[in-house]
Length: 243
Image (cartoon, rainbow, N blue to C red):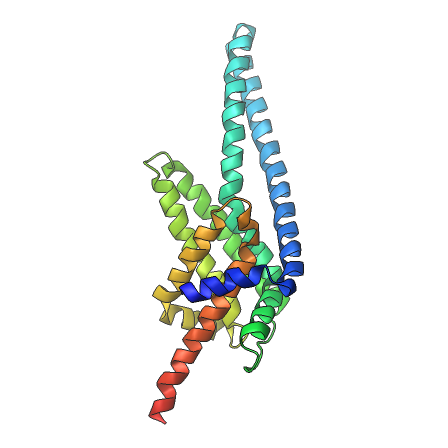
């Protein structure tokens, strides 16, 4: 596992990966900007609507106290927006991985496994559906863990574990589907749940690093390509002696 992670990190800065890295970072950054604008607009509307409703209910005498209160709430909301963007990163990188996953996997296979048959590109529709599913699940997990953030960091732990599971599921199955059907890729992941989840923990740690996490699609895909290759090699070694 550590060797696979080291290879993934090393290849991220190699010349063939640089073009994909720049495109991946650009796409992730653009999605984050869109998400930030949307969240900011929603928070601004909620604060403004709440202030107007309370002032109408309590009367004009409450104008200045409410102004101070909602100014403080706006500051808190701004901080919450920053935290929200951080927690949305797994969802954003999941979408990006659905677009560039095959390009990344192809480069890994060409570099480290040139003697083996290359994988088949996953149909873009299938990859997009899987990416959207994981992205939406990541958002749901984020919303479910937010209330627990104040309970001695319990929410952060819950989010980290859930992110590890979701990220490992997406990246491993996309790597496996280059050589098998979606059902077979899922069955392989389930047969090696502990190993695949261990890889997911590394991806979750990577995606938690600010700025660096924009490159998560490259690291996650490369890591799982190596992991898939090793699992398949292990299966072949178990079968061959029996023959």
